[in-house]
Structure formats: C-alpha cells, structure tokens
Image 1 (spheres, rainbow, N blue to C red):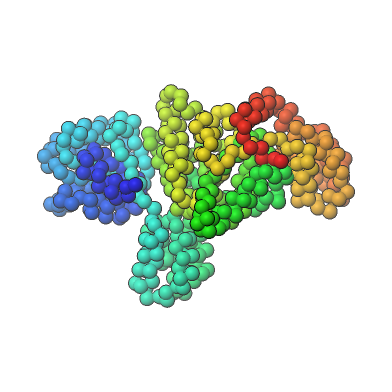
Image 2: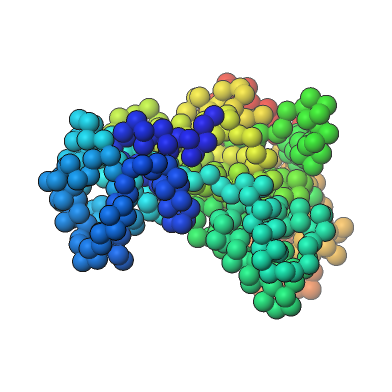
Length: 496
Ligand code: ATP
C-alpha cells in the first residue's frame, strides 16, 4: 500500500486539480508540500498573511481569497507548474463566488494548466459543486518509531535523564494517537515541575488523550465500572468474550501459534437486554479503554464531511489501540443504504468506509457493534467473516431473570436478598427485559423507603411488577418480527 506521502506526490504529479489535506498540523503539511514541490514554485494564501509567492518572495498581505482565485483564473501563465496552497479556507467554502472560481480553476487544470490547488484545513468542507475535483488526504498518525524519536530528541535537547527501556516503551504506547505538537507540549509540561520525566507523568498523557478524543466530537472515552459479573445470563456470549480476551491479552503468543487477531462482534437483539452492558464488560475483560462512537454525530452537512469524520474516528481508534471500539445503535447510521437521494448516498459511502476499515484493520481495536433492529441493517454487514461472530440477545429466560433480580437486589439491598423468593419473581416476569427488571427493583426499593420500612420484601417487588408494563406488552408486534428474523439469520444465541 502507498504511504500518504507517496499518494500526495502521485496526485500532484498526475495533476489532480484540488487536493484537500484535512489536518490541523500546518507545519507537517508545509514540510510535506515543500518536499513534494521539487522545482515547482509554491504560492500560498492564508487569512492571516494574505498572498505569498514563495519563489519570488512577493507578499500581498491585503489580498483576499477572491482576489487570489481571480488572479489565478485570469493570469494562468503566472501559475503554471505551481502549487497553490490555500490555508484554513473552510469558512470561505460557503461563498458561491469562491466555489465558482475553484470550479473554473479545476476545469482549467484538467485541460492541462499544470498547476494544483492544495487546501490545508483541519475542517473538511467540500461543496457539492466541486466534489468531483477534490481528493481528500489525511496525514498518517505519528508512528511508534516517530514517537520514540520525538521523546529521545526531547531528552537530548533538555539534557534530562534517559528513561529505562520499560518506561520509554510505556511512554511511547501512551503517546499513540497524539500529534507531534501534542507530544512535544506534554513533554514540556511534564518536566516543568521537577525537570525530569517520571512515571507519574503518564497520567498527564492520559488526560491529554482524553482531551483529543473529546475534541474529535465523535468518540467518547467511557469510564467502565461494569464487569461480566454484573450481567445476568447471556452465558454463551460471556464465555465467547472471555475466550477472545485470553487471545487479546496474549496476542503475540497467539499469533505465533497461528491464531487470528480478534476483529469484533456484532450483538443484536431486544432493547434493554444487556447489549451495552456487554460492550462495557468486554473492555473490562480485555483490560483496555472503551471508546464509544456516536453514529449520529458522524453525519455532517457537507459532502465528504461524514466520511472524513468516520475516517478520523477510525484512525484515532487505531492509534489508541489496544482498545474496544463500541459502535452503538449501528442500524441508525447504516439504515437506508442502497436507496436513492443525497442522504442515502452519504450513508452508502460511510458504510463502505467502515467495511473497508473492518476488513483491512491491522490494529488491536476490537469492535463491539450493538444494534436493536437488524431488519434495517445492510445484509453485507451480516455476512460471515465481517465480524468474528454475530450474537442475538433475546428476552431473558427464567433462569436469567433470577440472576438479574439477584444482581440488582444485591446491588441495592444485599442484606435482604436471602429473605426474598427470587423464583417467584422470575415466574411473574415472563416477557420482561433486563432493564424492566432493574426498573422494578429500583421502584420497589424507593417505595419501601418512602413507606418508612427498614427492609425490602417480596411484596414490595411484586407490587412494582404489577405497576410495570413489560417490553413485551409495549412492543409485542415488533418483538415477534425481530425474533423471526433472528431465527432466519441463524445468529448465535447469546444465552445457553
Ligand atoms: P438498548 O438497545 O436499548 O441500548 P441494551 O440491550 O444495550 O439496550 P443495556 O443498556 O445493556 O441494554 O441495559 C440497560 C440496563 O438494564 C443495564 O444498565 C442493566 O442495569 C440492565 N440489564 C439489562 N440486561 C441485563 C442483564 N442481562 N443483567 C443485568 N442487568 C441487565
């Protein structure tokens, strides 16, 4: 596969009219453009410095973006064999005149002008009118070797004590997913207190990483407190996750033995029956951070924005790996694939981006995708081999309901557990989801307290059951349809 650098050079040499470097790292982009330019001249426009012809060192600080684009279109010869760099112009890409001039330029460029426009911006905005002339590129994440080099150079420059190999490896791992600038900043911050690098500085890296994830707006780092012990039933799924965790934690030995790296699991099924709980428990079992991808937030208003968001989120997950990437309510993002109209096109492309990543993924980002309604999911996603396994989570059976009652009563009133007839409760709650049962226990505990009682009793819970409409009562028809579909698809049952 070509590196990003090689791709960029090829696009420039091949005369691609507009190349969009979607990155906040202006200095790295500058270096890349300089290195690729060879003998070509570079002309730059930015809101801060206006027009700048680097070769002839002509500066026109007052020149606007419109004047610059007009200039190119009028005086084509002056721009021949040049790279025109437009920095941070995303706010101007809503202006019809800017769009029209860029389109005019792109057409001229395709007619052999021998000049490329390179847009450098951290925000990806591509107006529909010029979509077919634009190629998006993102900088490769900083590699482990590069991170190591940044740390070692920093230590050299500052004249501080070289860390042990073990600590250096830990630092390298924890810096994964951050940019050059972010790594440099944290290193500088870390030595301000005591002039040296210490293990406690790893916390600083972790905090900074959370900032990066938050700023991405699409991923969220979820604090996990739940473990498999908090899940009643779903024994097949739990056992499967435990086996994958064993492989994940010993990946070196496992791969040497010939075992494939775990890719991910799709957990589909009834609402409120423990799908999210399993995503969280997986992260705990695997002993890695849990990243949740918000599919709703991915969908941007500009052409290419949604895919750029998704690529960024997936690259961030890759760079943070090992991690669990939880894709919640997957059907919401991928419903409507294959349909017609702008929204359907975006969804289809988004889906393509995701499938390619899943297929080619080399990192240890283990995907846990959860979905309620698979009838809306594209069949390509459900095909064997996409995920390591697809599980179907049904409403809890009687044994599972017993365990769920035990877990939720045990959490709130452990001392009362032994005096409550759990069998009777399980019998009375056929058709209730795990979330329904949790709700029943919560209501019963609140009632008992409000009535001035000093303990929780069977009758309190029975009353709460009577006052609760179960999931089955509320959505009988769609539950039956879902069950039929899961049986047809022959998904593995998460329960024994
Ligand atoms: P949705 O599809 O609506 O997001 P879900 O299947 O992801 O639902 P969860 O969020 O995992 O459901 O469950 C909701 C709550 O119900 C959990 O926080 C948990 O307290 C309780 N619950 C559900 N299933 C179980 C279970 N099997 N064991 C223990 N608690 C459960």
